Length: 359
Image (tube, rainbow, N blue to C red; front, side):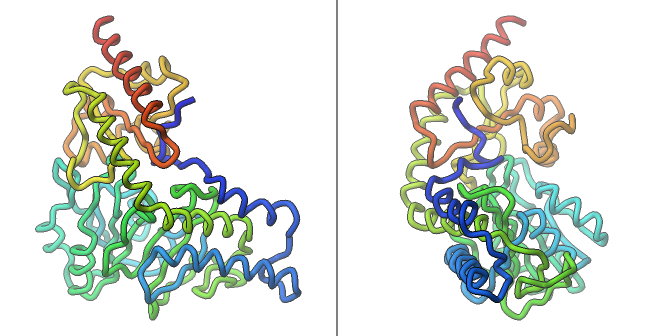
């Protein structure tokens, strides 16, 4: 199997697994207990918290959550509306914003970048929260986070950054007040995320209970998941430059392998290079995936798979239903070799060409 679906989830780093195993196998104490084993578990969590925080701005605190969806829900519901966000945001933002109400959703251009003039007009005094994704999970486009955060602060609003796809791969821009993260997007375990909260900001609780986390998040933390998240974050910090260079080589090889019949969706310049979202006229994606079952790639966001609806992100950049349904997402990174990527893309291209010949 050639795995090319890094935006859905990344392979677990061996170092993260090694960090988790003792807490899964031998050390089972509740980290919120006052006895010795509990304090040892608590200490492991604090080490992990520091490892995650090392890739974030100074002047804030990390609260662990059950994942990025919880972190985003907590931030949005904890601040409340009116809210300004972007049409290409993850469903965890768009659906939560809709539930809160009093929201303005900003359009994007054909390149996937937010319309800054529309943002400037919408982000006015009275707005309480502006929410934007650093790197889009479907098309990899990088939004102007620092500029949007500045507009939010000028209006007296807080700024929430969904940094799930960008954390550890690039510096978090200045000006964020709340930052949502997910471990399994950085070669860590599933089932754990975090919300970074700037000092001085208080959020209404999302989960009521024991209030085990300092910021008020309730629930017993898993030392194993926290340790895996921390180890993965530390590895992202240590390998940032080498990972970035590797991804750039893979991007260059991928673009050389797929010819002019494949069109890149979204900006080619303002983009994370480990995300290649492309379309080909007349492509039957379901047939392509059936013909190439030993290659794991995506027809869109894994979070929306099975809905039967075209991607809201591709619709937002102006693609027709047909063009959106002719699109695939190739995701690669640290553990992808150039040889397997080129082999997979050559086979994808050949299968796509065969469809046209068959027609």
